[in-house]
Amino acid sequence: MNERHAIGYGLAAVLLWSTVATAFKITLNYFSPPQMVVIASLVSIVALIIIATYQGTLCHLFSTFHARPWYYLTLGLINPFAYYLVLFKAYALLPASQAQPLNYSWAITLTLMAALFLHQKIRRQDWIACGLGYLGVVIIATNGDLLALQFESPLGVGLALFSTLLWALYWIINTKNNADPVLGLLLGFLTSLPFSIGLSFYLGGWQSVPWQGWAAVTYVGLFEMGITFVLWLNALRLTANTARISNLIFISPFISLLLLATIIGEQIAASTIVGLLFIISGLVIQQWRSKSSRSSEVQQP
Image (cartoon, rainbow, N blue to C red; front, top):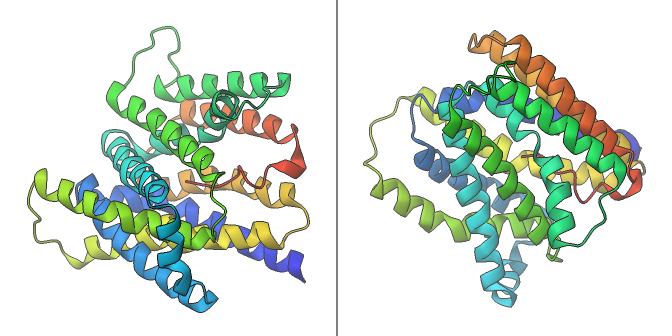
């Protein structure tokens, strides 16, 4: 029964994550990236408070923060503050069908950063995975014209790849966190919110937004930043086969491209499909490294 629930939670998380690239592009029609971070963070805070209350852990929020205030401030400034500012700006500059696969290479970035900061050994499979993954990145970024190395938006590509560094750094620092994961995530949003609000006012005023914009940004807050993360954690907690649950994530980018083409009419280049297949191949090879030890590393942005 637990395994059935684990697969259910995992599939729900993957399906919801598959929709967020489309939601990002819709929301960016109404809000700037800093404004998106503010509103989506507020929605996530409300959702996580409700979840923590249901789990009976909200009463430990202050004591958890008081024990390590600078640690949670650092986590919050990396994610959601810096990570989502960079990611949303990348989506503003690039077609979502390019930004999403580029960001999806974060797991390969994590391998390299774990070797640097956690002194983990990089095996031959990891080098092969990195080579395939970043070849896929170049194919997507150059629209398949590898020899010319002409980028549609060099800044957008750079920001999408920088977001993978921020996300990997967040999870490396998060390995030192022994607190309840929902409370840890909630504290990150709470500590970063004043910075997000300040930046949004510094860069420009808030304009009147129709209900469609508010609905889209609320969706982002619930299903990219908040609820879906908890679904994924529950899937990993309940399963007896972490690799099976982790492999579900490979479905996400293909569903995402289908939704982008269907809902917002974005044209999916053949080079994007080819590059994504290289990235997925690299990630599959990474899974061979140690199937039983991937649960702590496989978290989706």
